[in-house]
Length: 219
Image (tube, rainbow, N blue to C red; front, side, top):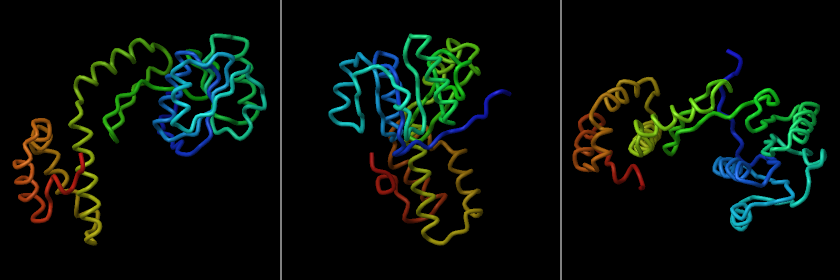
C-alpha cells in the first residue's frame, strides 16, 4: 500500500490554491467547508470564487504564482493546467516540507485527494491510489445512494447520547453494549421515516428515562 490513509485537521490553517478556474473553485469550496483559511493565486479568478470571498475566510490574489506565496502555508493545491507551473509548485513545496497536491498529477503530489461521501460528520472516502479517478467517482455515486441523510442524523444522535452518558460519570466501556443495541435496532429506519415517537420509545427501552430524540438533537 503506497498511501497512508489519514483524515487531516485543517481547521484555521493556511492553505494555498494555485488556479482560479473550475477545478480550483471546487478545491477551495472543500477546504472552506473543513474550516481552512484559503488563499487563491491566479491571473484569472472565477465568479464563484469572487462571490465566496465576500463571506468566507478567502483571500484572492489575481496574479501569477510566486514561490514566496508558500510562506506560512500548511498545504498547497495546484489547480492549473500549466505543467511547468505544476512542476514548480511541487518542487517549491518539497523543498519547504509543505503538503502538496497537484490536480490529476499523482506523481507530483505527496498526498492525494479521495472521492468523498459526506453525511454531516460521517465521511466516507474512496481512493484508487491515483490509478482510476473514474472508478473512484463511480463508487462514490453508488455509496451516495446507499448512505442517505439519515446516517448523518443517526451519528448526531449517537454523539449526543454519548456526551450525556459521559456527563453522568458513566465508564465509557459500559456504553458499548448500549450503542451496539442502538446500532443493531431499527433506529436508522425510524430516523429515515421520521417516526419520532417510535424513536423515543426505543431510546427509553435501551437507555431509560431522559433520552428524547427532539431534546438530544436539533435539526
